[in-house]
Image (cartoon, rainbow, N blue to C red):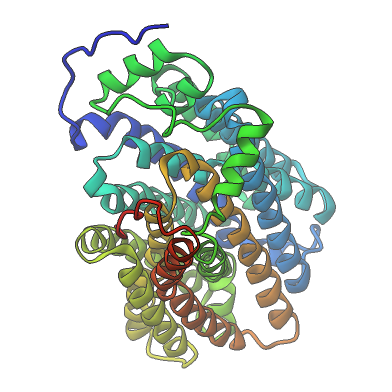
Length: 450
């Protein structure tokens, strides 16, 4: 089939990407709300004798959630060429809304844990899909900033969850907070179905050339080529995964996985346990839950700063610095500081903590080609979810033994290890290219690092 003639199209700017960014922002907002709901209501759940929740089982259930995320992240990318990114996003939102309803209805920890696992399946698939969509539609030199803007929604959702935990849980009970987690199916799903465009690359991979060109023209994107489009079918999915280990990426890929492991251990360990850890450190119940609100406010500020600075200085450098500063903040929180000082330290730590992980995603965007982007981000977030599994479980084990303060040391060590891993990514890429050039000296040189 001949390609349709190019039609006049708008310039590729933030204005043209805004509809996609806004819809993905809404989806990730509900993602952040659902993830943070558990931590926001955990103190109330621990005080509910009918549920039978203990600190140890609370950590285990937190890991069930993130184990579901691991499966969801690794599965979503492989189903994209079959269902499309838009339908996978709709399925993800629907799934974690159902999981929240199960939690609201649960009469014991078994069914509650099942609900969190189901929610995790949806939550795990949503993030890499939204990241891939936004990076595909974003202006090339503003990928890090656009990623940062997208991820502010996660923290806005975390703030909403904290507000629900502070206002709704004491008055109506923790179950009503989980009923609020059903709202995404009512609000976001209809909007995604009617307004979100499909990825031009995915449309091309499914043989829909005219639709792919039409979407690209409407949003000011270059028309997709066969090289940029992910190949369809099982062979295409296998090729995309194999591409993560081509010479230029074979060493960078495991380093990105390690950095993502550390970043998500921090994100989900803090989101799940910060209120209870601060409560165990001697702060009151309301103050302890409020710390979750404050750290998410810091997260929003940090993402706005990190996105702009990463577009200028590179996401690898910013991620590494942010990881180190996160480690310093975690060590400061080991001490019982005056309440005002503690709020300030928590806020500043939030500035670094969450955006350190988001800049890992932006760094992955510089490593993988267009046709590998969805698979690369899926595996970076998916393997990283093992850190999200380990974090809540490990801190829960420490809390069960009365050693909550060691959780801050764990967070500091994770920050330092994440900094080392992400700093080595450019070196690994250069080593891979050097080895490839040595074995095939007549091939064209690879492009320089972004």
